[in-house]
Image (cartoon, rainbow, N blue to C red; front, side):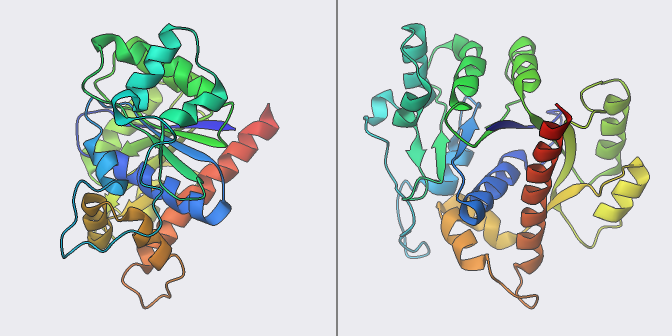
Length: 280
């Protein structure tokens, strides 16, 4: 049972949320793990749109893989807001957290805990408690850490994490900024942190190998390539369909590189967690 936190420096678009979604979805399909994907943003519409449609049109096929409803309570009490009410009343338990999640797959290998802008301003102070509680029930708790959360709460969540995935863009300035931050941060320079480049363009000279060499890393940095069909699926609530239909594509398929890199990222996270466990 592990907490994996996806974070960035908040100064640029890195594709952090969609990188977390891709890895969580494919790992859930491949390994049949119990995975909880947690949104900490005031507006979790990006995450919601990946899985749960507001409406259908002729461009979007019916999704046959979704559970598509809550785990036993109504929408007014769902998500983080409902859990915070329970936490305030000291009634929160690991097993009850899934009563407030949305099920992505019918066999519940992936669930989503959405935040909401209707809750109180002090919502973030309860995040660490809820995340740690969820970690007692799920195999992986993947936290999409929002940059607007107050610094003390962010620090607690990061320190409680078993692994931190630092998201950066495929720009020299972003890479240099990360290297500077890393030189001043015990966390970022530790084995507990993995670098990931989102929206990666294979035609850029800043390839994964070149970035790895430039940064002086031992292991090749992770990448989530830009993929048009995936980004469309993330707006149409068909991300599960996309991965189900693409997981066994061959090298001639346009989605092959994307799927392979998402697999590599997921497996790298899994192996790093195993290595960290052995070091304890």
